[in-house]
Amino acid sequence: MKNFSATFLQTLYAGARKLSTCWLITLPDETNIGFTDGDRPITIAGVTYSPDGGFRRSDNDKSVDNGADQIVIESYFSAQITEQMVISGQLRGAKVFVFQVDPRNLPTSLEDNPLTFNPVNRGRIVAVNRTDTGYTATI
Image (cartoon, rainbow, N blue to C red; front, top):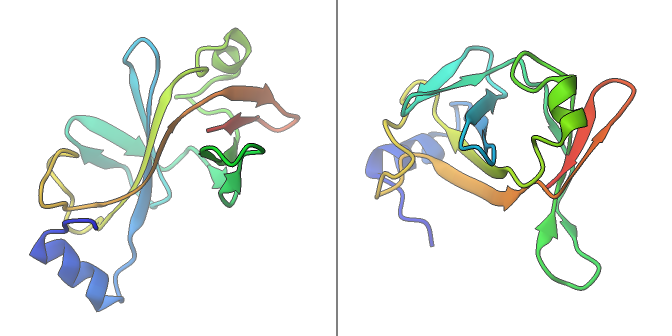
């Protein structure tokens, strides 16, 4: 069970506010890249989550051997994830953390306890493929 702060629980129960989904990608060289589905950049703990990533995520897919779930994201190239990064394999092995925040009451850290955000998914990028319009990444 997730241990949410009282303030974040009020946000969840209110239902009227829109939560923003954020993707934190930590490359193997420890560089952090952040994206959000919100309409404005969000900064949390020194990482700016940009709205220009254009991620579209699949539903969770079970692996063939009933192991870990997989998701596939589709996106287009941006200033943060370039075609060269995909071609050179820089994204392979990157850690991915997907979480939701209240854009009107952002957490100061992703280490908060009780939680002031909703962790959704964690994983690693295991495959990246270039497409006609950008790339896909399997997490």
